[in-house]
Image (cartoon, rainbow, N blue to C red; front, side):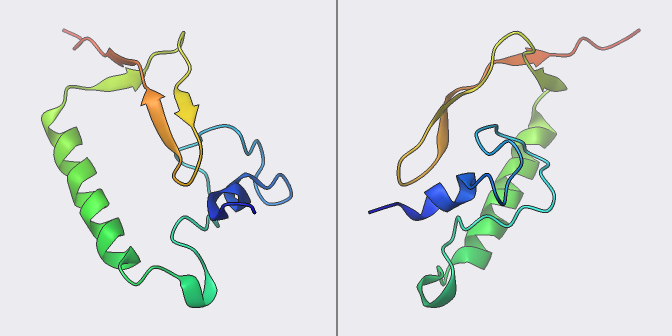
Length: 93
């Protein structure tokens, strides 16, 4: 039995499917399932996540993902990150 998120790694649909590309476009993922099994709360979940990320970024200094360390990703039913090293950008004067 394959988990639904494995469809998000189909190389016929996604170029470089094993890379986490935050601005992938188009991104036809099936994170909230599809068809009759689609999550009824998906629109609320997306809105909550968008608001949470906006608030986090509003309060954090400018940063980038550390170029010398790749994010460590775990799979399973839900894909996530076990470590994400950030580098704070120094303000230019």
